[in-house]
Image 1 (tube, rainbow, N blue to C red):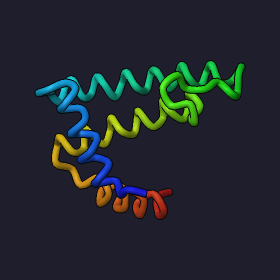
Image 2: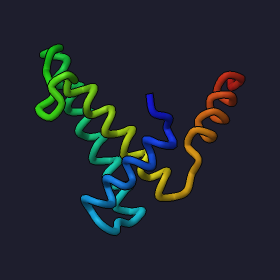
Image 3: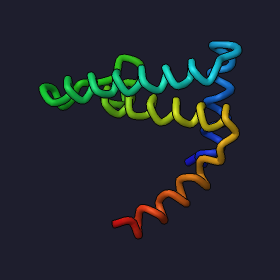
Length: 99
């Protein structure tokens, strides 16, 4: 699988190609929008476990929307020059010892 840095770069380029110049505020709104879509997909999935994505036939709607949330966060990280792999490793280590 591609590493997170590469996914972040690829997702950023895709967003830039589709949207053009975009702001930090736009990207934060996009993350919130994707979280709302995930919430809807999870709610729908409680009634229909096999509810498939319209776009990616090999995924459930929940899996697709979760991927969208993560990709939107990766785009934000790339836009803000955040080394997300490093941040995740550091935060994970902190969470291991957190009480």
